[in-house]
Image (cartoon, rainbow, N blue to C red; front, side, top):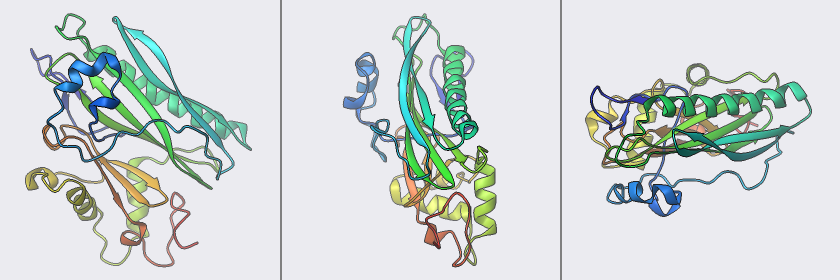
Length: 267
């Protein structure tokens, strides 16, 4: 997710590992983050922070109940995502829950390792999740991750879990990209489509930063409306803010071709 440079308390974003990104709305931040969020007030927002799903989505037969729980980390009341999943196959339901828990644990451990309790400003951590797609055979969960280590400003990141409900397998970012390229429309250049979509969502993104974006370093999340492409805060310069974009399936997949994680295409 990120790390501190030696001797610096500020949080530096590297490319997202499992996944993440969003728009900064300080009035949506938890009360304990208000001071830090005020530092972000001048940053343009390319994405609106989304709250967890208020109710389960059931189109795939699996009911995914997203929630949060609080964990104390070095005096910080950190919030992490939880999931309770019901469905026709208990093993798949348990797998989805386990992937959410694993994502929460990984983010929390990164915060635990990076946070310095001696920092003048108290840190904060919150990971919330919401279902963005639920249709046989795919469940997509997008996580919004708020991290403040007590430095110059907090950051907002994105992570995701994309599950094949036929067997409980997780679709990795690399696998999603590979399948799209294999079923792509003639002349498809996936990285170019990613950059085009991000530029539409964030016209002020520096061209040099846009040129670095690839399917390997952004979050890819299948949704009914298209492939979600999310770019972490500070990945293209901190002033720009995090960016959320979307590519319609019609720009990616060839007529008559299908991929399992986009069942809405070519039905």
